[in-house]
Structures are given as C-alpha cells and as structure tokens.
Image 1: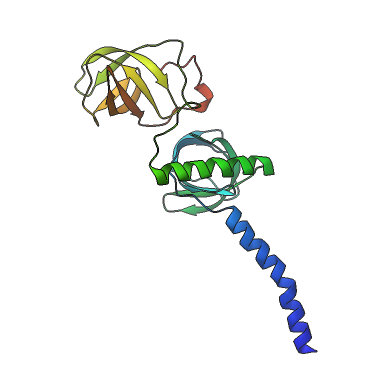
Image 2: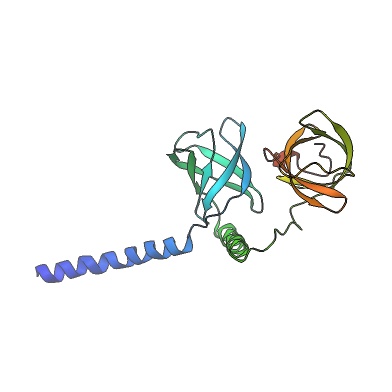
Length: 211
C-alpha cells in the first residue's frame, strides 16, 4: 500500500512539475539591453535599462529600487508600456513580475523573439515605428568647449536623434542638442546621429517635442 500511495503522490506532482517547466520555457528570458524610464507609486520617473526580459518579468538596471510589492510602470524602447510589481532587489536594480493579459504576453513574446534574432544576426535597428519628425526642426548644437552651431532635426526617438548639420563633431564627443545632453555616435552624409544621455520621457514624446 505504501508503494501505491508513493506512486500516486508522484503522479499527482508530475502535472505540476510539467506545468512549471512549460511556464519556464514560455517565459524564457532574453538578454537584451533596452533603454527606458520607469515610474514608481509616488509618480516619480527615473531612467533605466533592461538586463534581461521575458513575457513574465524584466530585470532592470536602475538607481532607485522602490519597495518589494510596489507597482511600477515601465516604458521601454521597441516594447512600449509594461506594468508590474517589484519582486526582488538586486545590487544594481530590481526585478519586476509583469502584469499583462495573455494577448499582451503573446505580443511581447513575439517582440522579444524579433529582438533576440536581430541581435544574434547583427541586423541593423529597425526604427520605422519608433521615430518621429518634430514640427519644430531647427535646433542648436553646443559642444563641450562652448561652440554653437545650427542644426536641423531629421527624426527623434526616445533614445536619440538624427540631425542634419554642416560641421560634424567627432564621434563619441559630448554635445547638447537644444537643452538635451547627448553624444555623437555616428556620422552620415551631411549629418550626425546622437544618443541621449538619458532617454526621453514617453509622456512628452510626440511631434510637438522640443529638445
């Protein structure tokens, strides 16, 4: 009888173990670095960057950790808005359990698959759905030594901008675009691409934005 009882207990555990393994497979974490911002319960916003992410959770590199169990809203480039709850603290940030309907999780899984494949294949960043062209295109660029010159915005994303300019500062040099701190990351014909030191707030990210 003990043998029969032992087998019955193991058989009862088997579906639960299989379900947990399936859940782990469905929520496989993707090691990808995405810039973003997060808002804690006090409605204060802070810059962040992902270390890894799955449809069920995300690990954020962030300076302000919040409280365990605190609700948090995260805006990430490529992925948009994610909501969840802080589940644990880490030396340089915290982990979030994502709260989302199954349809949202499925969409997130597809986006993460695309990001993982793009990274593995070394594909260029697809910015078709992430960049806007502001109504006000003229801007002023200022270098570290105080030199100023005019530029024209081509497009803007949460993390950077493309700017038409006659004189191109060196790559990796610090620059201020309007009042937004950035660095030059690429040259192209008649212009430069810059990366912002901190990502822009999604709340002000529309065609009316002024850097």
